[in-house]
Length: 233
Image 1 (cartoon, rainbow, N blue to C red):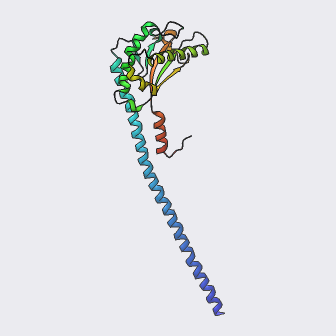
Image 2: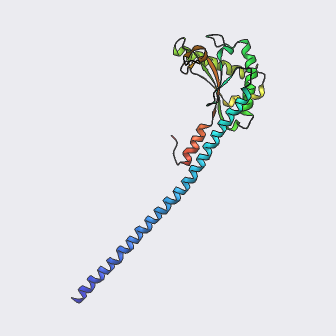
Image 3: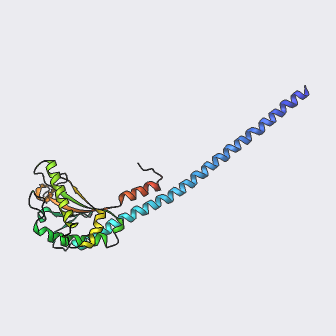
């Protein structure tokens, strides 16, 4: 009988030793997870700060670029309007085309010969080239005619401008190689109309060509996703 109780007491002792050991193991595992979590949060905070610096850098490039474009064209005789938010350079299509036509007028060549080198001197020769993803020639039409008709007209007008700039007749061959890597054309039909000083829709103001630049937003977004640990689609 005594031996029976000794065995029972010994079993209880062994079981009592097991549970504190198991609790200690769980505590150690939990502390490891907490430590890993803290380390990950510290790393993530550094990544977020790097992301903010990247965004601030690219926003600073846009601001400086728009400022330089203003300095270049604010006193110009070319009658060019600059969008202060986007940096788009806007001019009425009457400078380039007859009404409802997509063939460049004779005086359009002189205009483009003067405008394009000055524009690209700012975009490509002022330390901005590495940040420029696209240079876009964008055509816009008024509401005369159907959407599809004006879509084709605005696209053809933008293409006519690009075609001349990249042609053998354009006198500044040295910039054509840079343009071929970045230039795109786009037609918007009448979807982005403009108004006059009284806020009324203006057919004349809506007929226009815009030179726009696009910074490397996709690359920046990709870098942001990487910093945040996201995945690309």
